[in-house]
Length: 218
Ligand code: UTP
Image (cartoon, rainbow, N blue to C red):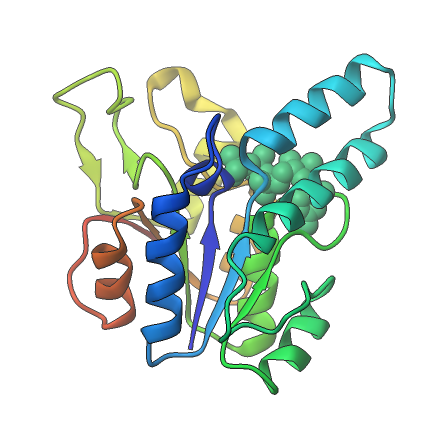
């Protein structure tokens, strides 16, 4: 079994990466493990949230709009091995997984992100780790998209990650692509967060417990 938080921007940035979605679906269908995929909102979530914000909508409504975007992205990953509906809660996801091999979902309720959903799901399933698939592919000492000599940080404690996110030391170049709530859930249940890039081979390595290119928090 594996819980994967798939960043929205990995599949749906400004353009939807149909080729990658196809490869990812193939991986899901062929993987021997039961997969729980939680898909993020990506570009469409940001676009709609920004527009609704300009229209003066409240934060709860903005989150609800974001959740709809995550579910729209999740629908792109449906296949014959996934339950044909999008679960709207962690409990529903667990229920659906009893019937189908894989489950694909988006957000659940306002107040957190899909990383939070993935951690809650892992907690409910007593899983020891969550795979976080992001465009950047790990935590670096400075932005690897700008600096060629940026160094990958392979391991980080919950405490250090929480401190960095809390103090928003982003200007130091360190960017942890996980929100505070998700980190806190990971810490309280000792769930490791393994951050990787979009390369499906690296995701497979994490599942097979091999060395992978990325960062482990916890
Ligand atoms: P994401 O999980 O994609 O958030 O959900 P993010 O971290 O901003 O985006 P990535 O990781 O770069 O792709 C998009 C938005 O949907 C709402 C939040 O407003 C979130 O910012 N959301 C999502 C919820 O309110 N609850 C959820 O369970 C999930």
